[in-house]
Image 1 (cartoon, rainbow, N blue to C red):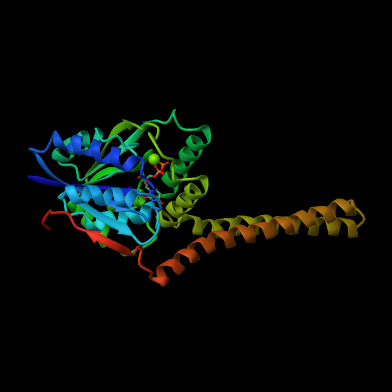
Image 2 (image 1 turned 90 degrees about the vertical axis):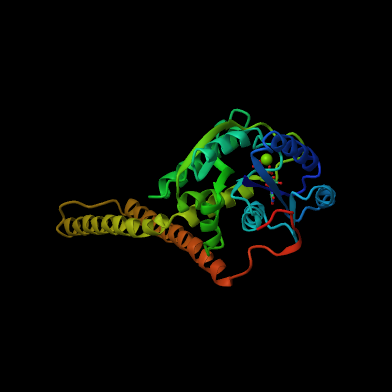
Length: 321
Ligand code: UDP
Ligand code: MG
């Protein structure tokens, strides 16, 4: 029998945790003749009753592997811990607020049976999102898609997916720390497909992602998936130096024409033109210092070599390694 680990991070999900657990139990019940399940639940430093609820479930259900962080480390770190601890032949990563519909698990498993190593859940309907969220998400995927070069990061695919043990072991073996799960999976490769789903609204509780954390995820995704922005500084440097050389030549000609009394330029406009000319160069310098600093920040993080998370408690499931 195939062994499947369901990995779900939870941060302040006291309202959703019982509903999630019940739903997932019902879902796996229907395929219990074909698969053995493990639930890897990560409490990402919740401040509400999430941990005590999860402990209650764990006491009655040995399929649960409960991992509790010492504080809130964030969604990506929680997924990472789940991936390291999961023991299944394949794992399914999903949100615990039922926004990744559990019924889709059947379709993920079907594709896995067909021999796919990675089965992505793809959102097909974003009508329920606000205009700003839809717009930023679209731009996010567009930019990542364009910048990711050879490794294509597919559009409208978040974290909801099934990955086989083989792919999982490769991801776990990667050393880099500041990684974004949805960017690292296509990097690893292997036979991939996707199943479509409509993402419903959150049933209870509220989203833990505000625009600030969304932009930080977008920034991380770009810097971790591409070094193309570094190349821009060189390109712009070449273009702007060509422009400035042409500018200097034009002004040299004007000066010569004035000296020979053929034509004279209005002094004021020349002064302002030069002022904007210099300001333009300064702005470019600042933009590129910004881009470079993104990468330096990344090197700094890697050099710090801090653990991605610290586990406070680790209550294992009954599944054998
Ligand atoms: N989550 C987490 N740590 C965090 C933020 C979120 O483990 O710091 C979990 C959260 O409990 C949920 C999933 O990540 O299971 C997705 O979060 P959320 O529903 O808030 O994001 P959204 O669906 O709004 O993008
Ligand atoms: Mg959600």
